[in-house]
Amino acid sequence: MLNGHGDDIYQYDDIRVNFSSNVYNHFNHEPLFAYLANKLDNVVSYPEPSPLTLEAELAMMMGLQAEEVCVCNGATEAIYLVAQTFRRSKSAVLMPTFSEYADACRLHEHDVCSFYSLEQIPERAQLIWICNPNNPTGTVIERDALLELINRNDDRMFVIDQSYAPFTLSPLITPAEAALLPNVIMLHSMTKEYAIPGLRLGYITAHKAVLHNLRLQRMPWSVNQVAIDAGRYLLAHQDDYRLDLAALLEERDRVANQLQRLGCIDVWRSDTHILLCKLRMGKASALKDYLAREHHILIRDASNFQGLDSTFFRIAIQTPEENNLLIDAIAQWVME
Image (cartoon, rainbow, N blue to C red; front, top):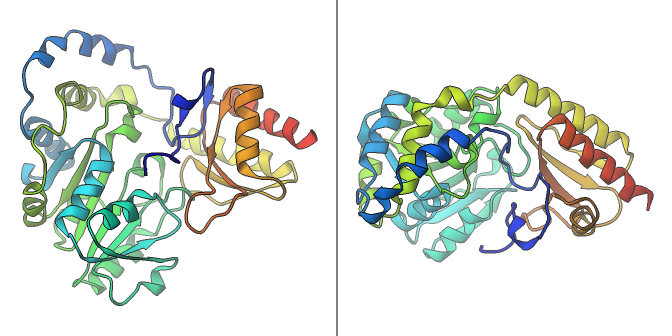
């Protein structure tokens, strides 16, 4: 899907606070920018056909072998690469969720179906797609329950997107654990973790035999040199990108309570910094247009997530000052 995602800031002239993507927008990137400025000579040469250097450094960080990591041009390329590798399979997607899983599967001629509970996985499904933590709900499937499900269904491949792992305190399956399981493919997003959506960096972790088959489908030079240099810098400077996650989630609870008190919004429980909200009256598209036009604030109209309707919107928690601007602006919309 080319249109209908969050962070469609490119469609607006003067957005000052962006709640629409699931990125925390307040890291200091100036040292990264300065580093990349000194690396621009690299763009006159081809990068590695496969970003092996970055893969090796990611593997070392996670306690994996390099053959168990595959760097991609964002997690979205990873999704399409998995769908391509398992072309014409039967895929089941846990809903509501990111549309690209089903889109990638349809592009590669999968038989795609949806399900809404782990107790109701379609029997015919060969690939099970799960976003955990979930987008757009922010909820987490309990680690031990998910491992039990994977082990009980060892004849199916589980594709688990953990792009939002940096934003939860709930226990999750680790990449090292997943790499020991021949029926798990795990997706990760440096875009989300380091707030660099314009650079497009993601990676896959899995058993080396599974990743061998995936790599056979990968285009050469899919990850550009600037992104590779940025990825290596970020891994070397992780301490500069540490979130005070407990404080961020405490702020999430405050915002959820304030929105609920407006009396016209229901807020879903979340295990991350994401809040899925439902208007009791009016449409999310109207609220989005009002906030962008009158307050230069961008939210995510979530009505195009399968299983949701026109009353749903999603936000990602930012600073207390910015969150207060959003709460006050929504309160004004309610009064109009």
